[in-house]
Image (cartoon, helix red, strand yellow):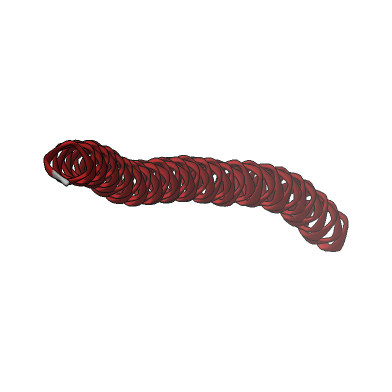
Amino acid sequence: WAQTMSEKRDKEYAEREQRVREARQRLEGLMRESERKELQEREQALRWVKGVEDAALMREQQLQKAEEATAKQELMEVQKRLLNEVQHSRRVEEEAMLQKEHQRLQLQNGILELEDARARELKRFAVIEEMQRQEENQISIDREKQQ
């Protein structure tokens, strides 16, 4: 009977050890599976974070490009405005120079007209003087004849 009990105990002990080994193997398998799932979740989280970072970087680059395009457009508009102002200034300056030249020519024309009028007046006076001289000569001649 002791032998049967001893065999029974040995058998139970062997069965318990077998169950413990199997439980340990299942536990190790579960732990490996848990570690594998955790690693996958970490990798997935890292991919998600990388995706978010990449999207943020792309958005930042898009914003930077948009800002550069806006700045370039504003610069072009400022340059265009400056060019228009310079051209307007040149036109105003040209117009002022043309007006000044026109005034100078009008003044010069007025001076020429005055000089021409003066020359005609001098000629008229010279003709009158000549006529007066001739008349005086004629009077002198007529007096001499009368005497």
